[in-house]
Length: 445
Image (cartoon, rainbow, N blue to C red; front, side, top):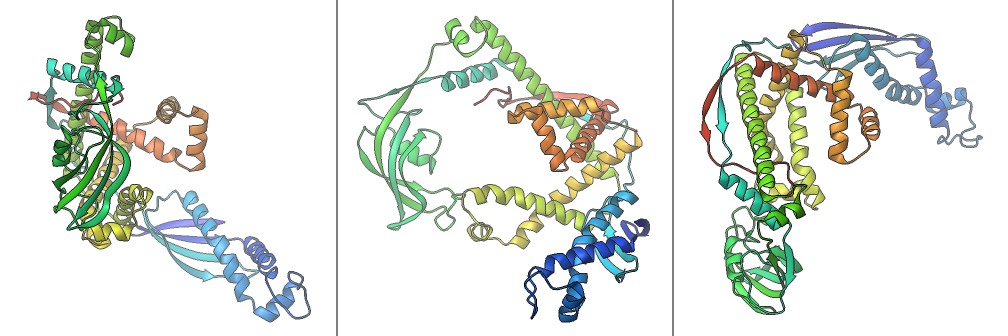
């Protein structure tokens, strides 16, 4: 097979492909063997009619069409690989010659990864936020540990308090009519986390085991059933079980029970160290995000529409997939959110454009600076993924290869290196302290 690539527009390439006559003949013969098994020709059992009879009865066109359907995609991908282009959309195909005994010749016009005109990306100035870990942050982590390892004691009597785990039956109505998501049996909730609505939890306080109460609430504006969002509801609720957390005292025994440390002081020191590392990581990430945003704004690239639409498709799928797992269709989602697919795609467009441009800019920096990813770094990433998904590293590697994802994995590692390069060559100014630590110790909640 012969393949050549010619740039016909800024981000568009035309492939000219010539396939050997023998491959076309082989594809036509294969098509005949497939189609004859279903052919009904007088005087012949299914699958037994010679090809000349098949063609006399049906013509040659079905064989040509079937051969083209199987041969064209394969030859196109071979041409892409041979010429080294990087398509970002589906090609426009023009058939120049498709006749048995002669070379199969076609052209393919396709958008390719656009060229980036990099702006300045070295010596950029950015402020690094300073995030300090306070005693309150450490105490909050200890409280999370106390709650996670708390014993649940079932009460035979008593009233509901904040933090209790209660089992309830509930039946909600709006204007006397039930609504979607407003009914359930034997549902366990933690009082104070805002089940259905904040004022619902408040009305559970003081209820006794076995008690039934009609609780009036205002459903939140983001309630799943948009037909009742923001409306007044009445939820008839019965307390079937009350379990109360029994928190261990903060002492050395607690430290031994929940960690590898012998003393509470050692546990506090470890939590502080983890929080400081997490804070430093967040601060570094903020620097890199600010740097890459500057470079993107300083750089120029014409994005092919197909490339943006593909990214929007990906973002749409990320939204819809979790909903589908809950049994919510796209049509139901659009109806509940009072929007359309077109409106949602347009809403995502700006983020999609920035995301694509950011990747292209990082790729261009990596190429210009001759950055490379070693096989050892690839193996380390596979090991990290295997630990995250709790699977054997060889199985993860095999899965990536089967899905043809190794190239993307290496590209993502290269982009991370480009981000590191930006940070290493930037003028970083230490900023002022940021208050309000979030839990990011790697501890499981």
